[in-house]
Every structure is written in structure tokens, then in C-alpha cells.
Image (cartoon, rainbow, N blue to C red; front, side, top):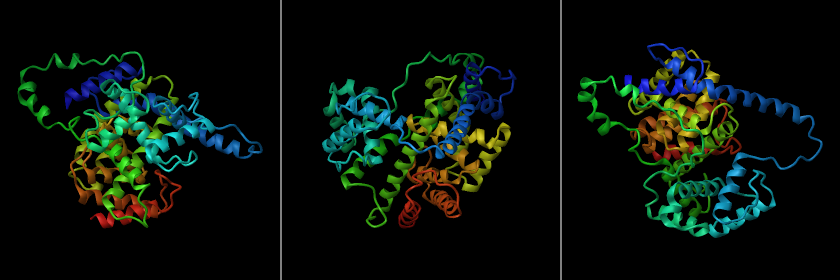
Length: 409
């Protein structure tokens, strides 16, 4: 634990300018100096700008503006172009050319063809294929364009998709000065003889199943079924919950990507490194999710938050960024820890994610009994008026989740 804290703070000191150099490191120093200092200032500022722009534009909407540019639009165009569907210039503006490319993609995949109806499962599968291809799939198969996309689909269908999880390709940035040697020197025999073998056998960091691969398979099955499960046609409640898990994951990633896009003062690699460290800091709370009740897990995370000395708004903004990065990189500590922090900071709808993880065993041990506690609490909060964070426009989604939850028990 001491070694992990030392490594974490080493990264924090290399990225944050004004952190007190104290001998003892606690959660407050790390959260205040490393992640929050770089990310939260932007995240909160952007939320305020968005609210302000919504207020100012509502009174001036007397003319037709141009097509808005979005991060998701640019990602879609990039992936469509990569696989040979010719969406044109990557500008984030989804116009006629992009919609035509979407229709060509839909036709080749056997989806319903409608460029104005680009379903999330279609987008998710396209992006997972793109991440896979640019992370080694193209080099391995020596294919390009649509044949490469079809190769990915075959791998998912046969269950052989990637030894490594599909991840967003790393963006070029200056190398991070991560001090790996410093903490290892002074630790002589006692630390190594007692704990050297245990972490390699029992640490849960990277050996678990890939949620990214799981969601690729779910999206493929959804497309085969002709769309998402509804209340009217639900025959497999477990699969319906898996669909909603992957859908919520996609929405969490999209929301975080919007925040990450314009963060100033930190490169994407630096933000990722800080969220990795954030995941390490909340790992004990994540591990406890498989053992503790929902109430106990929230209490532990609130204590960590109080010890940090930071405001709930700051911690929530940081967690939304690190939730997206955790899912993008298949870092379950960062993703689950961020979701738990958001619940602890008063956003109970994120508890749905924890329920999904406990039900399927991603980042935690499978505990369907505990999963039902989290599902029930998040849905009850929505019934009581809490804000929905996943597909808020789909008003029957809570009913679908509750029906699937009851039938899956």
C-alpha cells in the first residue's frame, strides 16, 4: 500500500505545480493536487458555460444555425473513413455526406438502413472495431477497409476477439516522467520476501475479463436481433440487462469524452495517467464492493471524499472524466471507483453501473445479491425524482430495467 501511494504521488508531483512536499501522502493531497487540479477546473467551467449558453441562445433562436460539430460526429466520420465508407472531411458536422456513409455502413452490416437513425449499438460496434483495428488488428490481419471490419465481426462471432481489449488509440503527446525507480530502491528484503509473490497471484488489476470485448459481443447480438430488447419483446432478462449495461457504458464514455476534448493544460496522455492513479487510490473501495453492502460501500467512499477536503462538485467532475477513461481503457478500478464516487457525491443513478458490474463480474467478484441492492436503489432514486444520466429521453428505460431485474433474480 505504501509503495502504491508513493508511485501515485510521484505521478502527481510531476504534473501538478503547487503541491506541498510532505512526507506523508494522504487522499487529500493526491485528489487535490493531481487529478482535481488539472481536470476539475475545466470540467466545472464547461458545465457552467453550457448552462450559460443554453440560457443565452434560447432567446436568440430566430434563425437556423449551422449543423453543430460534436466529438461523437468526428469519431463517427473518422471510423467510417477508416473502413472505406467515405464520410468526407472530419469536422464533426453530421450532414448529408456523413448520413450517406452511415447508410453504406448499415447496409454492409445488415442493419436497417436509415442515415437519420444511427442506433447506439451500431455506433458502438463501429467504434470498437476501429479501436481494435488501430490497436493492432490491422497489422495482424493485413486487411484494410470493409474486409477489416468484417474480420473483426467474425472474431467477435467466434469468441476470439483480441487478446488485448480494444482501446482508443493513444494520442501523441510528450512522454510522461513516471518515477518507477525511486520507490523501489529503498525497499529491502522484508517487503519483497513477504509480498513479492502475493500481488502476482492475487492482484486483480489486469487479469480480469474484458468489458470492451463483452460489449462488442452484446452489440453484435443486438444487431442480429434487429435492435434493443424492449418491455414488449423481452424473453432473456439477463441479456436485456447486458444491453443496458453496454449502453450506459457508451453514454458515460461519450459524456466524459466531451469533457476531455477541451481540457487545457494537460495532454490526453497526462489525463489518462492521472485517472490511472485515481483508480489506484480508490481500488480498496472497489475491492470492498464484492463484500460490503451498498450502505457500507458508500460510507467508505464518503470518508475518502471527506478526507480529501474537496467539494462534491469537484469530485463529481473528476469522476465523470475518469469514468470515461476507465471504460475506454478497460481499467475497471478507475471506472468502478468513479461510479462509486459519483453515487457517494449525490448522483445515485450511477449506482446502476455498479449493479451491472456486480452482476457480471467485471472488476469485482460476481455478487448478484449485492447487484440487486444497487439496481433497486438507483431505480428507486429515479422514481423519487433523481436525474437520469443514461438515455434520459427514453422514459420507459427504468421500467425495462426493473422488469429485467425482477425476472433475472
